[in-house]
Structures are given as structure tokens and as C-alpha cells.
Amino acid sequence: MPISPLAPARFPDLPDIAGLRLATAAAGVRYKGRDDVMLAALDAGSVVAGVFTRSATRSAPVLDCQAKLGDGTGPAAFLVNSGNSNAFTGKAGDASVARICDATAQVLGIAADRVFTASTGVIGEPLPDDRITAKLDELAAKLAPGAFEAAARAIMTTDTFPKAAGAVVDIDGTPVKIAGFAKGSGMIAPDMATMLVYIFTDAQIGQGDLQVLLQTLTDQTFNCITVDSDTSTSDTLLCAATGASGVDVTESAGFTKALHDVMLDLAHQVVRDGEGATKFVEIHVSGAMTNDDARKVAMAIANSPLVKTAIAGEDPNWGRIVMAVGKSGARADRDLLTIRFGDILVAEQGWVAESYTEQAGADYMTRQDLQIGVDLGIGGGMATAWTCDLTHQYITINADYRS
Image 1: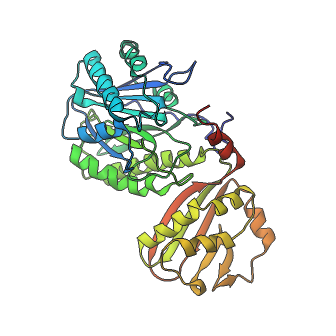
Image 2: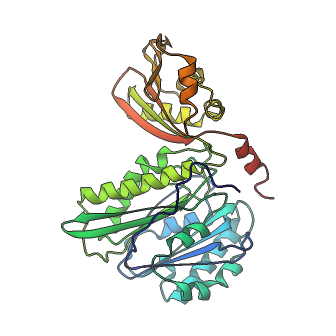
Image 3: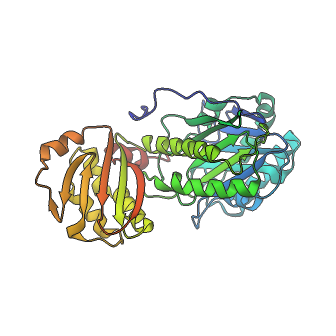
């Protein structure tokens, strides 16, 4: 599969996180000739926070992770496979998770309730967990600091490039490091989390404080993106703080901003790798009665197949944006609505702007990165969403996903 035209030029340089080691292996869960299992081992003192899909059909690994989150600080591990989501697999799925956790705990010498698993791929097929557990000794032997790119590649499914982001923030003269990687390309409309995302930091912070911070920042980042309006059964975001820096970041605005920026970078990369995507689109809504209304409008535009196909065809069909505003469920007034493409005023006061020309709109749509601005003219509510276009390639990819 060709790499997305919106992909970054290269995999970023990430800071090593003290207290974290990574390894990958080829277990043949579904894919042949590539690593498809990732193990992250965390030293004692680490705390783990997470947010997950609220899908009513969430997977066995998601349910297990949700049950395990808590105040533990012993050694921990994340074990992730691609190719099979272990979702809608009933009691067999639960048993697979238990076997993987027990085997991982035994190999690493840690408690089974500190093993957090995730699976991504096809829904409804039993997970061949014996292929994964057979690789645990190899994984344990290969554990090493800094193996981020291999880890990011091992968890990919229809992704065309590995996604990662990092930051180093100075707090009272001491550097605090953050590094994360993600997978996601289709079935992207997060609901309390996103795809699969793993973020690590050497900061010192309590589990409860990290949990609140992670949830708050997720709502500002991953929960503001969409590729196709479909929420996965397996969406998992885990963040581990090893505490190795010795720097308490509980009240640190600098750390909060750095973590936010890493999460937003990863969220944007997921959109830029949207299945078949050729355009990255930011939708900013202002002037709504409430922030919630603004979000409704932004996501209605971002999820509209008619808007997204027009963008794919580089057609400045602003009437489809008017349609999306009207169907959103938010309070709107036709005669107060303003629409912009970037800095181009397209429509105002219930009609096309006198200054607007179709040629200007068409020229703007040829860009890879687009901005759509909507002001409802009613109140102070604002929201931003990020999406991509909808092309023929999306259908090609998903029409034979299981083949």
C-alpha cells in the first residue's frame, strides 16, 4: 500500500524514557513476514492511566484493561498484537486475554494484574494467542530502550506509516521526557479514547492525577478527530509514568502543555493517515450557543460524506457545509451564519458573499491542508475538529479488508 501523501517526512527522534524497554516479534497472528507483536516493559514505580472506547461491543482486552487500572506501582507491561482485535469473541476472548497476561507475567516476573493487553485487526475471529505466548521469551530477551519505530510498526494494520511524537520539557532545571506512538487509519471516530495509543514519560505523578489529566487532554485531542465516523471496539489509550526523572509534575502547566502537544500531534497523524486520505482538514466553529453546540456542528461537517467527497474532488461546494450545520442538532440561524475557506469569505448573512468567486474557492481546494471556518453568530461557543477527505481508495481498502 502506498504511503499517505500527508505522511511526515520521517519517523521523529524520540527521547529515551528511563524505566521503559521495548521489543517486537513476528508471531504470525495474521500478517506474514512482519513483526506483529509489541511488548513494553515498565520498571517498578510506574503508574498507568488509560481511556478507552465506550462502544457497547468493546473487546476483551479493553474490558480487562479497564478492570485493572488503579493505584498499583509495581513493574508493569503492555502487550499488543495486530491483525486480530479479539473483539466479539465471547468467553474465548476473555480466556485468550487471561492466558496472555499469565504467560507475560511469568516470563517477566511481574503480577498478572499489571499486564495490559490490546489487540487490533479483524473483529469476530478467535485470537490465536498461542502464537503470541510462544514469542514471549524472544520478546523478553530483546527488550531494550528506544525501540520506538519498531514498536510503532508492529501495531499497524491498514496504516501506511508509523506514528510517533515526543517532547522534552524543562521543569525547574530538570528535563522531563515524553514519547508516544499510535496506530489508526480507519474506523476512526474516538469516544473517550482513540485507536491504539501508547505514551510514556519519566515524570513523577500519581495515578489518579495522571488519569484526570489524560482524560481532559483526550477530549481536546483524540476525541476531536474523525476519519469515517466509526468508533472501534478496541480503542485504547494507555499512558505510563515511570517517575524516573524524580520531577513531580502534578501542578506543572509546562508538562500539561507538552503532553497535550504530543497527543495532538499523534491525533493529527492518525487523520493524515486516514484510509485513502489526500487532504487534511481543520474545521473551526465559533459563535455557537455553547461549546457543545459548536462541537456538534464541527463533527457534523467533519463526518459528512458529501462534504468529504467534495473536498476529495477539490469542489468548493459550500452548500454542503450549510447542510451539515443544519442537520447537526445545534441551534443555528441561516441569516447569522458565516462560512470561510481559510481567509476567503464564502458566505454571510444567509447568502453567498459578494466578494466570493468560485475560482478563488476552487484554487483554495487544491491545497493539501485546508481550513473551514464556520461562525454561527449566536454566542461564544467554540470547537475545532480535524478530518480528512473521502476518496475511492477508502472504498477499495475496506471492500476487501478481510481478504
